[in-house]
Amino acid sequence: MKNTIEYLDVLSTMTGTMTHSAALELFTLISYLVKENGEECEKVALSTHDKISNFISEYVTKEHLSWFNTNSIRWNSNQLANIFQVFLSLRKDCLNPKEYGEQAFKLLKEYVLHHPKTWEMFYVDSQNILNVFTAVVGTVEDKTLYDGACGLGLLAHELNAQKPILRDTNQATVGMAKLLFALTEKDADIQRLDTLSEGSSSYGVDLVVSTPPINMRVSESFVEGQNYLKELFITARIPTSASESLWIQQALYNLNAHGKAYLQIIPGWLFRGGYDAELREKLVQLNWVEAVVLLPAGILTDSNIEMSLLILNKAKNKDTIRLVDARSFGERQRRKLHLSLNDAQKIKEMLTVDQETEWSKDVTIQQVKANKYSLHCAEYFDVHIEVEQLDLEHELAILNEKQFQYLSVKDEFNQLLNNI
Image (cartoon, one colour):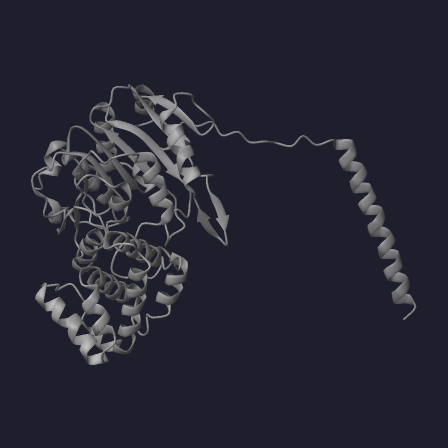
């Protein structure tokens, strides 16, 4: 049986003239067709380009997959048989359809993660982020989970919640997410919805786990009147830069009375003024902020900026906030950050173990209030600067030696000039 990397190498040669986004649509659809009807796919894969194209087009029409870009069939008809053969070969290597679905999902996930900067249409979580959330959130099989900006649903899939409620504004992204969950026979409620402007009633879930788009610009008129804004009413006007606060408010609105939220946000939200500051103040006063983790630069696939993890808990029983500075975690490999599961587990330990370390500490609400409700670690961690103590006499001796060497070389150089 070929391993995932071998299949990935073969698949990566078949993009042809397609963008990686269009290729992923085609790969996902064909992998699902092979799972649903492998025998028919075997026959079709041995026929002409036109018959293969018609087979896919008819299925797209029959199942009302309006999100699928049918141009990718016409433009790459000569590759279709080869793509079918990749997934048919994978199917033969598996014991049953369920195992095939899991292996096909794993292959598609690796394809996504191996092409991090080429997803024009949708946001993709990095393996670093998946590692952090998997370790920190932990076991959630018995809990209801909501993500209002789910992308391909890789994060929810990784966490393996009972039945995740997933929403995203991109039609193609939602379509592929549905097929990816169907491949692994996992139940999920996945729908296309712009959750910031078309919010419904609260889902009352146990968990919100989300990595919403960063630096998203939102106009006040776009979101005014939404129910999630009423639970924690903010008097300040909503600036176009307040999307992080809106995602936070939306997450809290969709939690039940004992729910927790894990949100990836830019560190700027932790100390910005205006609307963000007013929301932070309310969250701290309500004692809903459980922890803040500063993550290392490069944790995203398409940016070298730092990110942070905000953990909110509506049923929090401690009167302190745990701060973790994990900016030095992970290893740089060819200018890219690799944050392993072991690194992620260390972050989890610093969040859960009571003992404080040089990277983690508890702060009181009074301390946060004194710092104008800033939640950035830099406001609370002591910065130790190691200053090397120099031996002045020793340094002067070195300087004199260097000066003597310089004068000797200068004399030799002048003699050479005189002899020319």
